Image (spheres, rainbow, N blue to C red):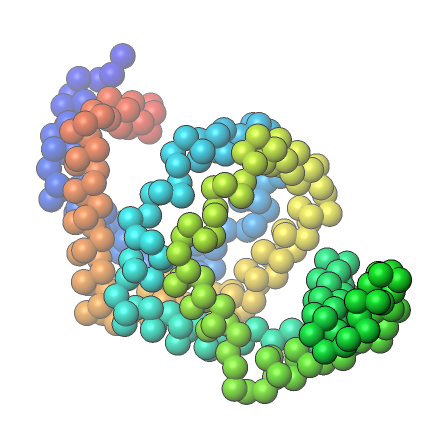
Length: 298
């Protein structure tokens, strides 16, 4: 049974946005005054593998996405239409700074995939056939003799020699010539493409995806190697951060100037206080808060 005086005080508190904001200011001040070495938790604490086992294997995410008709949620025909031109240009400028330049060896592996080899073979075959149809008067006779069907076999014979040259051409003309910016052009293509061209929802088999996601979740939960790999990466990242910045406060680490910090704190606490106040008006969490306080005082 909830203590009545505590419940009354909590109700009064949650009805006063200024008091809520004041409490939030205390939290923000404490958090940003703390040193990184004190607030960056050991990854072992938060990367608990057993948590994965507690998540349902058959997630309802994909059926829900289908019900929501996510392909029609966005109010514009392209992503670019939903932002001002200056914002788009700022995004594209950022993309120019992010250099995506894989090695020639990586490009060779990509173009050596069976799907790419089939694509190149079909393109070359179609080009040869169309060329001969227009310029070679004997090609009709060659087709009748079935010789045109041997073209692809001939192409496939030389593909292993051709592919490294294709990879070198792609690397030198697209990735390493200093003129083209693959990242900028790729991002621009995505944000200016009509969303129906991306065909997002229709491309997902929601029934299969639900089962596949469940299988993936089970596999990840059981994968000790993967878990240990992520844990090592997190621990190394934490170590490097603490070696260089551990003695800094969060405020120093984020580079806040005092004036900017005060603006951030005031804006954040007031908006969050408004959210808490509005949430309580609808859901009446006074009893829950009172019970937590009783747990603390017990």
